[in-house]
Amino acid sequence: MNIVLIVIDTLRADHLSCYGYFRETSPTLDRIAKEGVLFENYYASGIATGPGFTSIITGRYPTTHKYYLTPYNVTNVLSFDDNIPVLAEIMWVNGYTTVAIDNLINFKSRPKHFLRGYEYYINPSKSPFVPAASLMAEQANKKIIPWIKAHSYERFFMFIHYWDPHLPYNQPRAYRELYRHEKGKFGDLKILESPDGYKYVPGWGKLDEIVEESDGRTIDLYDGEIAYVDNAIAEVVETLKDEGILDDTLLIITSDHGEGLGQHGIWGHAGLHENIIKLPLILRYPKKFPKGIRVKSYVQHADIVPTILELAGIDNQDVFDGSSLRKSINSNIRDFAVSEAWGERAIIFNEWKLIIHYERELRVLKEIYPKPFTRQNYRALIPILRKTFIKGNKGYELYNIVNDPMEIHNLAEEYPSKVKELEEMIEKWIVSKVGDNDPINYLGNYVQPQPV
Ligand SMILES: [Zn+2]
Image (tube, rainbow, N blue to C red; front, side, top):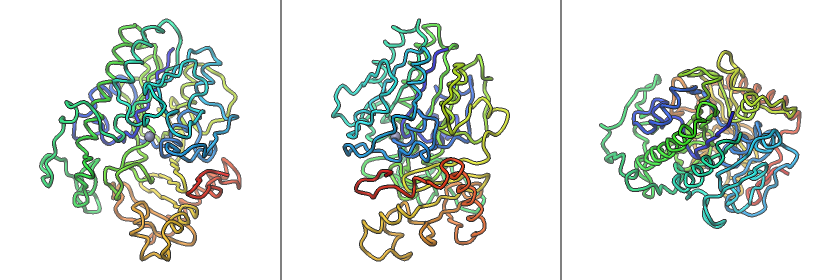
């Protein structure tokens, strides 16, 4: 068995046609999903790029790998613990040829744990000074396709990192012009009504809050990037097929985090709202997985490593937070999902979702903004906190994501007992992982944000 793990940066689930999006953005992923398994409730373990990729390659949540940052523009701020094993190392030790087509090393912090374990680390950027996110899928494919052809007789683990849906939107012209929404007119969009009574466009937000353009960025361009990377994946799949190894390859396609697209006042990927943490996960391996199955159990980044090891028959003694996705097909592997960012955690439990903003995050905001930090003025400070209900030294957002899928109405003040119940669940979860040593209490300040 070979393994090809494809991570598409900044890809939210609800912009893919196989996840119900009203535009046909993803014909290749739709086809792979029909030939494999699609996970409907897949949540990031960690946000954003740094924590997300670290969770994907360690099988852990940030609470246990403690890499809470995405230090793309700062040097030497954070060292990852060398004692925590990463996926490529385990595969290499167990006889796999390991290859990454990735450029995370272009981050100014040079995060070396993304290099560990690779016999071949191929950086398609061609320069360490190029911003990682500007990489185009065709540059990556120029490295991926010849490598597969040259090594198809080996047993390999391949990690592919595409950046296209991330800013800048620099796709070829055909994909820039693929979707055209006319500003102010909503006839081309799918409009639904939420159970609690507002109109919204799935993937775009509440109708009267949609941001149609921000500094030249549009949802049309974001969707065009998705279609572009989808086509690049078709070329990779075609190559595997031509080499006669497609059905003997475990193909996993996922993302590190989503994208705000103007919802909650954010164009970027901060915070823990659904547009940022609910991601695609599609898996194809006909020898062990049924065809065309859609799984509803909560699954997370941390489940990827245990799944790969189980399917590869690797009996590993390391401890992971996640479980094999095979188990999730017939039963729930967890009762709730947890997603983390620097200074925040979210728990998703049936129709309820609680986001907790911890003291450190609130204090950082207080230090940045010298005005008194009161409930009246924090709303204007930063979009991430604009709806947060502050109580004591924490902030809370409680949503009913069935009635209010766009997370418009923060119910934290109205339902204190629900907040308490969910917070207790998250606290028990933390204790089960790290006892009383919750790393979120030891985050550095905003100048040098790192666990100490
Ligand atoms: Zn990212």
